[in-house]
Image 1 (cartoon, rainbow, N blue to C red):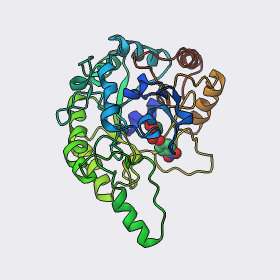
Image 2: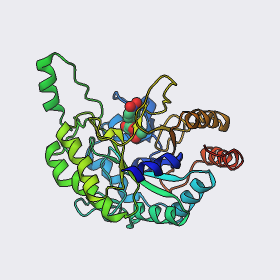
Image 3: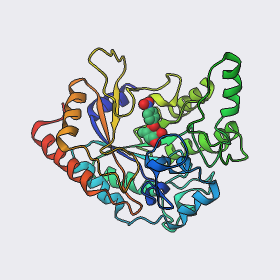
Length: 338
Ligand code: JFZ
């Protein structure tokens, strides 16, 4: 993976994109803001289904109206380029289980279930390559609220109980679990979709796994090995689980201190407000100066900065965040990113 890691080291600044069915809701469900949602757990907009414990069938209705503007891919790729970014990582499938690409092993995807009917991941990939940007995908392997039953909760709980350890259920669909087991979901959906993404995107640079909490060591290794065997140029992040990743992170919105001795390359992912997915009412934007402060801090310590945008259901990027990103791009054009 030496060449891939060398690319990563130079890539420095990337765009993270959280986009999916939840983007249409903007963090509001039946007039209740997600911050006032009745159930515990993260109050970020992409956790809509979890925060309101929305049944799978009802949540899936959101697909019927998911119809972004055709120009979303061009616009976002251009924004990333002008902001001085060198790579883009989009949520190909977040915890809600909905795939933004054309999946053959599930009908819960952009092509089969939405009026848009086209492969949004492929479109963005092509737009990015034509802007000279590199491309990666986020993929929630561990959590899938539409498949994978209770996300392995009962099994993990049984083991933990015998050891006297408390088991967190956050991120596990216990309100309306699918009939499939978590293991069956890995076999029938998750492993095949990773293969599909690698085949769909020949120049894919990285896969950003997430939700690894209850994934077993064998399962994490299988994901890691599958990526390596299919295309060894693709990097895998730490969150594939069990330390199999090619590069590290210090936690969301966290920058390692000078004393943290990270023995691999690393990346900090961060938000521009308090949500990854589009949250209509969150106007608590970080200023351009604050974002540049993080940028310089991360660059000076040798890391990469993966800065997030949360486009709305139409694929439009909130004005406040695109403005800051473009201002960062102006600063980087003058001062560089090294
Ligand atoms: C996860 C997701 O649940 C979230 O929706 C978003 O996609 C984010 C980028 O990743 O949330 C996490 C995962 C790990 C940490 C924090 C939030 N962490 O290690 O601090």
